[in-house]
Image 1 (cartoon, rainbow, N blue to C red):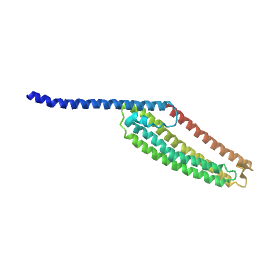
Image 2 (cartoon, one colour):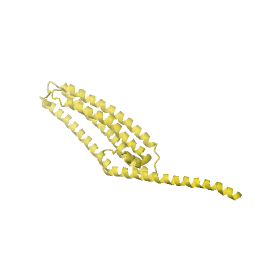
Image 3 (cartoon, one colour):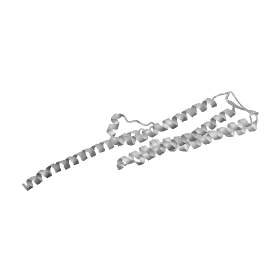
Image 4 (cartoon, rainbow, N blue to C red):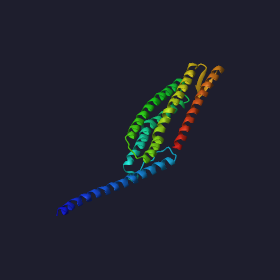
Length: 241
């Protein structure tokens, strides 16, 4: 009878143990499926070699399980940068073009518009730094299996770090170019008795001033070309990742 009571006690215990193991195995299987679905998604997106960021549907999020929140870091960063950097940058470009494209705007007005653009660029760089810091902080909290970590890190580099790095490299170059444009308009204003802007065109009455002005314009054009070259290089880097 003692043995009978012993077995009647142990049998339910064994049932719960094996049931718990089965549940763990089922949960592990789901995690593997979710992880693989997320890896496949990341690899497919990076293979497309495009700069736009895909936003997973609710169905896709269910397939990714908890890993959907990992991709949220990438999406949230790009949304925040588009809102706090991209939109102000577009407004800045539009407003400056209004002034610079006005044939009646004098050199001093154009210079003020350029200086305003220069100051705004510095503010936008701070906004980008803030969003990057948030994304990096969230990224550091993830504990991922090695197979996912390798792919996710590549995606994070491509969609978060690389665009931020490009902005931080190119913005100082843009700032330098704006400084040169501002100096050119200051030069024009200082020689307004011999240089004038008429119908949006710079007209010079002195040959020596013409030479100097041409040098300044060529310097600006070279820097603009350098900016485009750096942008192209970053685009190639993104395509390779």
